[in-house]
Image (cartoon, rainbow, N blue to C red):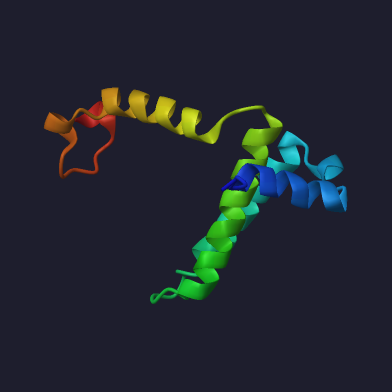
Length: 105
């Protein structure tokens, strides 16, 4: 059975609507920020509106995927590369159970 990836599905969705023309890196980065603010709004006054949060999180992830695609970056690779850097900054023996910044460990 062949499964279509999220990336391929997004590409098809955008192509069907000819929206790629609007997807400059700048516009996509702006959209990530705008949608992240809308996600934060779901938690603004205490109890989260989980249905709305789910939709807004999907929007944030969608724009992140589109930006990675536009920049010809693989999301899994860039996340794992960044995690490796963060691991070095926050070694388990120093960072476990604390939220202080790496330069204060």
